[in-house]
Image (cartoon, rainbow, N blue to C red):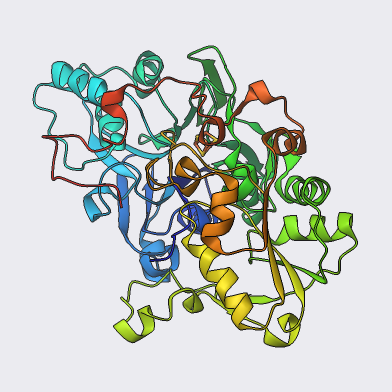
Length: 475
Ligand code: SF4
């Protein structure tokens, strides 16, 4: 079986803009964030007195059409596209979640993964009686937590409850009148604020601001709650910031045209490639990327090494985004569903192939075999991240430690396992330097096992609440 790529927990988008078709803005914002979640998509809108949520399984353009978007009338909207890292991939867990409150309603979208979900669920039970949760995700617990039974405003309730929440969360939520956004004190996942001519936008990535024509204003700060309404933007710090942004966003998760903490992701990836060439040079005729996430690092590798850059693998971008199960004959084609070699480019050449990461190793083994089959005389694999040795508990679903090839094998053993002529991973120091951020501002736990927020054994790998809704499992 081939690897599936690491899955991000989600993309979130929010807009407050009277006079605009906010559902359509949310649609385009989600379209720009589709890479962050491809299992389900949803939009909630409010017209000031009523909240309507529309969500379904599938890609953003599969879930929404013109007719649906036109029925979502209002001046505030939040949107969400999802991969499941907590709870199963079922409609009930699609977001935004909705919950009636003592004063109206609350809809919420979440990117990240909480690490004290059980504790929070018991608080919800204490505060409201039977939790009545319909889904199995940490997001349902969060939504229930914010819906204050005594009728406190959503601002007051969120300010009081957010300090109790541990783990990774970039949130967008709304009530009838106000758009809210919040980010955990570590700021694991990105979240930015943008300005429209007639309103405001919050989004997981700056690329989503660009697509709706919003100007970047600033990041939502770690530990910050903001509310956007008639009187503008209101901000409060609910916990001191201890920034530890996710290093893997720079490697793979974020779009190359996004900027995180002032650093362009594409530029960081090219710089990693340059450093990779210095750390692991190769005698070769051609540098090729594994498209598309390996492309910027391959460009950097070629620039620094002087080895020509070229395309050697063609990606079918739409495979893996279909809900049609492949037939047995098609499934046996394995990686050929996703990648096809350009024989004319490869035959007789010593190839450096650059990829972003190795998770289980199956993909790289298949790529090496495919390149040899296409006539490569040597295959040198270069990886633009250090070995992924530890699982992520903050919203990225890699695999368990036993499934991670680098959790069990040395680099020499991995080289042998994937049958490459040579193998080099960028050093952690070089990857960090390429981000231009100091190491202490970054989470690097999947590479070095140093978890910024300790995760109790009971929460590790048990992302599904027992006794709450239907049973689910990590995909
Ligand atoms: S463990 Fe890795 S993937 Fe998870 S937040 Fe930290 S750096 Fe990102």
